[in-house]
Amino acid sequence: MEKSGMSTSKDTSINNSTTVAESLADQLRCALATAMPLLSELSDEHVTLRPVPDQWSPKEIIGHLIDSASNNHDRFVLAQIRTEYIFRGYEQNQWVAVQQYNERTWDELLRLWEALNLHLAHVMAAMSEHDLVRKIRYATTPEKPMTVEFLLNDYVGHLEHHLTQILPEYQRISTGYR
Image 1 (tube, rainbow, N blue to C red):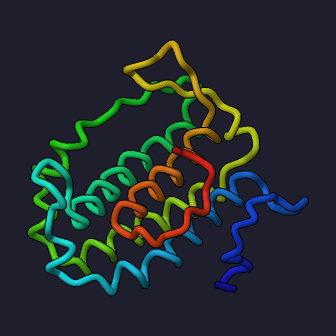
Image 2 (cartoon, rainbow, N blue to C red):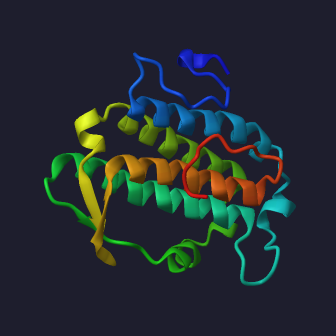
Image 3 (spheres, rainbow, N blue to C red):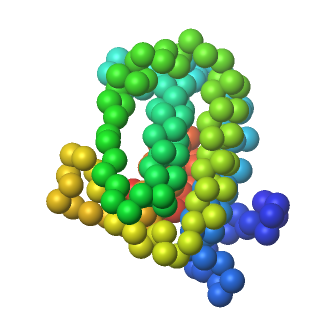
């Protein structure tokens, strides 16, 4: 993909004019550009089936990634605004169950997931180097601060981790969330 100066190359090194935040945003955009055509080709029958009863279907995995994008949007913005930020977790399984993602159309879920993540890439790319080194904490482990850069990298890695569950042929771009 050549759009916006973005390359599909797996080289995640940063040139002198690209910030860490821009590089992570490009990784997210590249993941979307790579996965969307593959995801769009999956049949409705395939995306609604759970591999085993206690695991999510592909629709529910994308639904979980929609929830993750929604929660992380809040985190990415507030981590830039507040000097001290402790963010809450969320009940992932309950969020997926309550929203009944298997009842939605695949195309509708994919369009929402893609739009949310393109916006997150925009938010990420606009972050300054100062923002990236800010310390944030999870409410569940406030004694373990992390940087915003770690959070962004973990977000992209988490997204790709779940893409490999749906698309075994998907090749990860990021180095986060192994």
